[in-house]
Amino acid sequence: MNTRVELGSHRPTQSCLKVDPAGVSELLPATEPAGLPSARDLLLQGLLHLPRLASSEGMIDRKTASAEVTRLQMLRAGELEPYAALAAVPAPRPDLHELEVRLISATDAEPIASHFHYLHSFRAGCISVAAVYGSQIAALCSISPFDLWHVADELPVLPEDVAVVSRVFAFDWAPRNTISFLLARAEKLCPVRMLLTYLNPNMGFTGASYRSANWQLVGLETGTRYAYLDRRYITDREMALLPRATQRRVEFSRMSLLPLEIYGRLLERSPRHNLESRRPFTVARPLLPATIPA
Image (cartoon, rainbow, N blue to C red):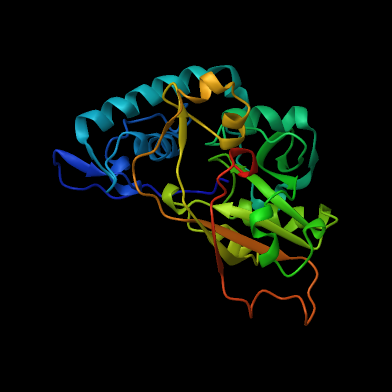
């Protein structure tokens, strides 16, 4: 999942730094406002990849961290160059009321989810809803069939009545509150009774956009860890499809990470089905890669 992240304040120079939004922000090079990768993009990539090199306490040598951020910047610049037109800033920039929310095709959604979303992974079999300005996509969300079977018993409705918001992304030029605006309208296009999504607080995401769209924290998933193949992050779904010989080359994050947060939104309310009276549940991350949502 992706929401806006505020860059952290600078800290005093020292030999080591903490892998968190404030610490990684210190390493970011100066970038052009419309350049690729953006500062926000590079921050998220640093937060995603540095846990591979950091200690279990999240500390990392500043020189090592800086070299990794430089490597990520070069990778992202090469990856995004062919798709620069998708991120072009419209002139004039739109106001929120000028955005149209509608379904878009997988052909239009895939380049954005695969190259601009910080996970770089498009979920097949989803429906995609976008906030569009003219011919440009300002933001999108992907809604996938329910497959989070390890939380099914914790939900107030049956699994067949649930869908999962599996990806959310907004370009930096999108108006303020675009994500909550998009989510509030996307739910009207879903023939289900409940939506779920994950939020990763390790990336600096706060859940403000979800709460603004009347979502609630419903659970925590412990056991967070990241996987990497050849020094690049891969999702557990991608890892599960690798040949076994390739899977043995996968590395995992060494840094202790906060639990993922699970947010929910009931689209049909009743005295029997509500979230306000339910305390957030806690579940463990599934052991089988094929069952893990990212």
